[in-house]
Length: 132
Image (cartoon, rainbow, N blue to C red; front, side, top):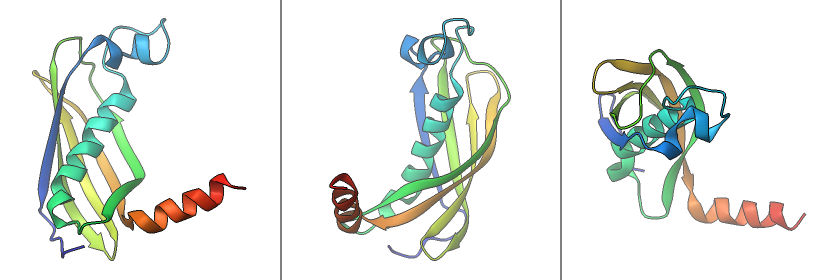
């Protein structure tokens, strides 16, 4: 991994479709609004976007912590945009401030952490685990 400085930013967007609704994704009794796990997905993708160009071939970064609040509902058809900003790097651990907005307002904010990993080593560990 090349050195990553605080302040590096990334973004990701999604138009809310039927497959992203809490009422379809989780439970039919829920209202037809964006499901929290999908909002988190867009935030995590924004974090990956921020650091993608710093990763060496054979590296990736896996999520290790999500601490966010989902503060407003988003209806079907609206565009959700998430932004992530690197706030701290400690070795292979990267901490991001994340936010998400729909077309009207902020819908979520919080912190997300990712750890840079060697994909080959991970594949070996998963192979060993699968054989147990």
